[in-house]
Length: 288
Image 1 (spheres, rainbow, N blue to C red):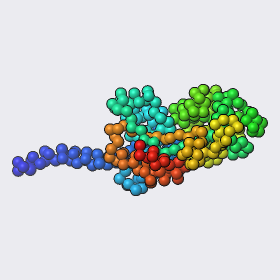
Image 2: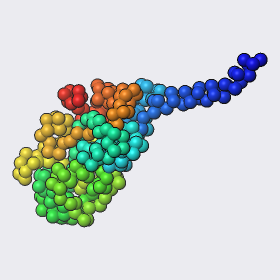
Image 3: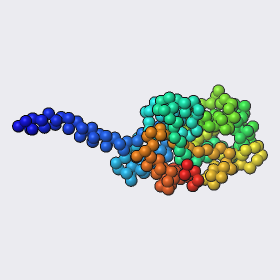
């Protein structure tokens, strides 16, 4: 009888442990991903394909911009941060203060950052100098760059976007965007605006080109204009190519998360990269 009473006392504790154990196992396969809008369509497709092969895994993907992703990583509100630019020194320092270590960086894909115009725009190419003139507001009419007479409407991304920062650094050489630039909440919204505006111009990842026309870009005015495609991006001949990244707290880079990151950079994950419209990593970058 005494033995039976002891078991009764222990029963609630045992049940708590069992329930907690089940919850821990159920939660173990959960992975949260946040950040770059450039990467969000690829990240969603990765999650869809991976969960189809690993039903036990639950992957939640949201966008919001690279800056938003880094903020979530610093605050330990996401497992993985998608980024369309490299992490800044100040962001590294904030992460070190938050979780004691520098975030681990993984290159996951290549992108030819494309300049988009309306499909009816007769122009097929622009130089980096001309793009800088347009996006800073120095050039305001298409006829000044060989197009039809008509005003240029600039569509840009919000300043939390890694694509915005990359374009400003590498194309505008740090100069400010024109005050007239219309800020769009995401690449899809930007492309939609350009596709409905005959005078429109904007920029975004290579996978977002539907409904608009990507221009060839030359490094110098009168130089060879290069089309953004897999060959020119991998070789680096297209002037506005870049790497896309995923960042993770090293303490979390184990188990399911480490397996998922390895899968992204492996053959299956890189096939998804190509299907979505970005460019797979060359073999030597997959090892890093």
